[in-house]
Image (cartoon, rainbow, N blue to C red):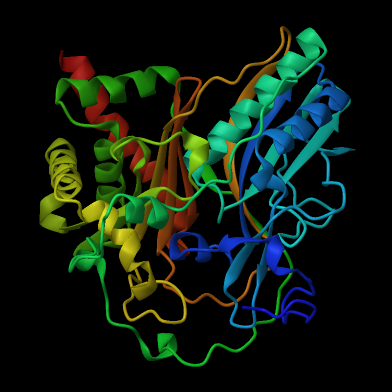
Length: 434
């Protein structure tokens, strides 16, 4: 543990023992190195009351105090969650600009100061963009959507009633701690065996030297959005064949990737939210990163039929959930991420499906007409874990299935149209012949 009163290598931050909430667990630690913030962003049409939004964000900070907690690192770059500091929290940032852009805020986003920030960009023609950034170590997709929904609840309450009533929540906990409470211990299988690769020489584990910080970087995925009619046909296809939409999308991604890159085999890794699968279940904001990882690998011959492939993906997921393998994955994270890793998953496809995004509350006359997921690395540093060959983000908002992409190499621009074609061709064909 860092000695109170001495300085850190990466963040010149002093703390006392009573400031410490806890050290971060591996499921949280993997987002510390880059200071990764996950962002939820919407464009807004209508007159936005910036003062009311600032009041709503202040209420969100009171209701969810983890947003004003801090993360610092000890000499070995281990993340430590600290209680809020003794200065006033950073409030909402409001400025004028282009709401069609998602910007890197001009103000500092430092996890050593706080873990949640709100950036508001106004335009003169009653348009705006609102982006909530939350440090990924303390909030995954389910948690972030809950926070964003509460922000708009508080904003609507303030506009309609002139007041906001909130109660303070406990700090969220890790999946590792929830499994320990339930008596789950590490077993032999991680569930990632089919995508595990040998470490290359460049990945060899050695002494961790202090890493220099780089300039903040924003990742805004390229996107393709199906229209509501196309989305409805994909949903009908899933219902007709008793497969999940997640299975269909994953199958479409695998088929598109093998086609575009002409590869013989491809592996996919995707998170599975465990909140409703734990006994007892937990609420969205009660946990930090409450997802296990599922893996699926197929060869080119196994991708001929999108529905059959979707069914195989669903069966594998069902079996791994039933046998407890998915929850085991997090207990094996030190083998895949960080300085003690012994395995690699280099070359895999990463796919995150956050499902249907709720319709956020808004006062009459205000329309939240688009929704995006972005990522911001506040101080990116060299990674200590394999990166995906390409990352896909999937969600449905206002009846439109959206697929985003990060990375993908020289032919990346072909991937999203190929995925959409895989989904819509089968759905359109069956709709036309019904």
